Length: 273
Image (cartoon, rainbow, N blue to C red):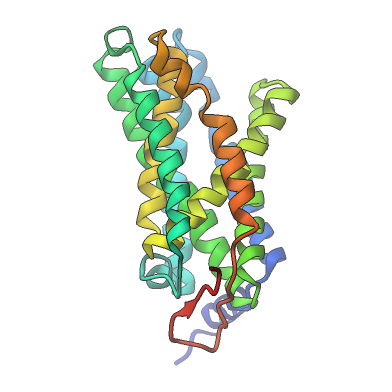
């Protein structure tokens, strides 16, 4: 016997579209921040906000739960294979620029961290947090959101722009933690450019695993380098990472071409030269 409720649930999401993508992102945003608020009493007992315990409570636990919820959602609509399988549209060689830029600055950040001051536990916990952050945010925006936009027949430039904008808006929640409006505004611009780079990484490699790994190395390298910097030329060069990612992401966005048609099973090709 057919499960009418499950069928209706899947049919609703299979239609895709930008507004359904917004609904999904908003629900995730509310659940994630709600869980963070529930953990506030525990966080209040932690004296050092940069300790391994603080990272565990502030980042690892909420994002781990978020990751599990996203996987459960993907399973409920039957999209797990679509998200983690080969991309239905191929990329072009110029898209490797996005990967190169992000990777170079991640390496520069990692090379300008005072690991002795940070300590093994803090570094290890940040690396663990990075894995979950990369997984959850990429599965949500480059996986589920991109899938919904493609199911609605959006052109790939719109898919890249909308998914990156929703990814950026996720970080507006930092206002709730006391971050200034100016700093948050800059972060939104940066995360939009970074989101485009992650979309291009997925396109050119043909798999969401690439942006997950890139993202997983980005957050820990930035946070650790900011908290435990080693002053010098490498650190100064690493400081150019944010504007570089913004410029590269926004410029390359305008070269994105192609469209995935929901009725076409064969891979589509980007005609950009």
